[in-house]
Image 1 (tube, rainbow, N blue to C red):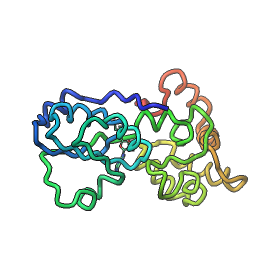
Image 2: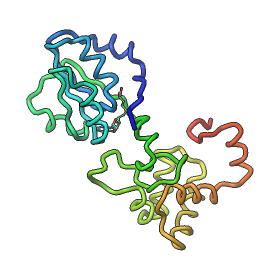
Image 3: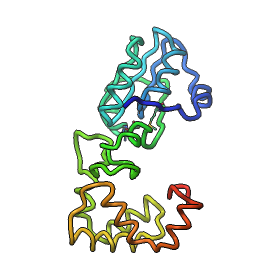
Length: 206
Ligand SMILES: C[S@@+](CC[C@H](N)C(=O)[O-])C[C@H]1O[C@@H](n2cnc3c(N)ncnc32)[C@H](O)[C@@H]1O
């Protein structure tokens, strides 16, 4: 699977950073290297760019894509740890393009998409941390409800959390389809029917 990411607000990012030859930048969310490639192009051979990403697949894809730039350095890690990842490096600027990459969404095995049934993983860094399956099979009803409200603005949070407890008591969740089944069972049919014609996918709901 290839990275097909169209860098968002590319012209605005380049205008704001205004990268020049000899400068040093950090891209904290390297992804497929779309933004980084354009920054490197403007700096030429004397520029330096550190591309950080939690996802090893992103690191591999961007390393291949940007291999002709001598100043490009890929760094596997969390941008939150930038001081430890780039000790002593002085930056002219940096960029964060937050979110999930199209590659992560389009690769069923990563478990981010509900379009195909796949293992419920959802980790950006597959080398560490808890999978989504481990999380939904152990989280308390109260914490899950709170997470759906805080991070998803989900108005059906309480019902979804309650349904999760019921379903996982029958059988632990393993796949994205198992999680979809929880949400389906929690939300009244009439509401779902409305979403499917007007507001689907759910993140486009008003
Ligand atoms: C929207 S994509 C970036 C696409 C990139 N700007 C491009 O043009 O190809 C977001 C990327 O950020 C990474 N990411 C998300 N949170 C991160 C974090 N805390 N530290 C490092 N990388 C992170 C994801 O793994 C994903 O590859």
